[in-house]
Amino acid sequence: MKKICIIGAAGKLGKYMVQQTLDRGYDVIAVCRKQSVTKLDDFKNRITIIPGTTNDREVIKRAVSGCDGVLTVLVPWGVQQYSSGTAQAVLDFSEPNARLIFSCGWHISRDGKDIYSWKFKILLKIFGSLARLTHFAELNDQVEACKRIFKSKTNWTVVRGSDLEEGISQGLPVWSRHVGDPILESNLTRRIDFALFMVEALESHDLIHEAPAIVGCQSQSALTYATTKSKPMEL
Ligand SMILES: NC(=O)c1ccc[n+]([C@@H]2O[C@H](COP(=O)([O-])OP(=O)(O)OC[C@H]3O[C@@H](n4cnc5c(N)ncnc54)[C@H](OP(=O)(O)O)[C@@H]3O)[C@@H](O)[C@H]2O)c1
Image (cartoon, rainbow, N blue to C red):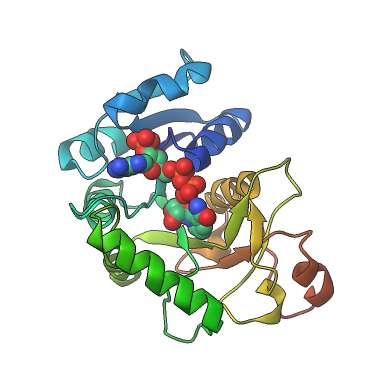
């Protein structure tokens, strides 16, 4: 794999992925909104930046052309189908065999078998309602985006992040197919390691058509339950 595209590159997760992909020697194409371009100044001259909204199909078509892999930060901001528009464009225009890695949160369920705590469900409901009322975000659109990805025949992986914190890397997170698995109980991952999982997934065939829910490898639950139930990524 040589050339990859990062969509939503100027956010916190995106910038970690830019650094990690450059460290691995990839040619990096970065898409971010026009007002965010300066956030990528640290990488100037080392990456190609394509400014534009990520649900602009022409922007995405140009950005993913010729790319072996696409890392997409799926965000539910605004009420203009930002997530589903972004996902659809990536699915439609990426090269046929490209590895497509998407980020989202634990609230996305692939098969309905995830088990959520009451606290998680209440917080999600409150945040979702407030966000919709204020037109700040549309969580349902991220759900719609993932439905389309799950149905797609492309080489996709949807990485479902736990709550996030900043800090130096602890290593590759562990994962499970279902929220509710004891190994995920700690519900905390360093954002830099979320990025690491996304980047490592580019080269992992085992993760094709999987929606891993991740948690930090040094979190209490990962250390306690690291048994056969956790499926470490095979590279
Ligand atoms: N935050 C959490 O606790 C958490 C927990 C679990 C999973 N996640 C997942 O992790 C991923 C990254 O989340 P993050 O919190 O770390 O966010 P982030 O990386 O700080 O930002 C994500 C993106 O949001 C875009 N953005 C910001 N405001 C926007 C707006 N008004 N309209 C359109 N785009 C906007 C930015 O795009 P530009 O690059 O164009 O500026 C940026 O790339 C998401 O997929 C999220 O679902 C987050």
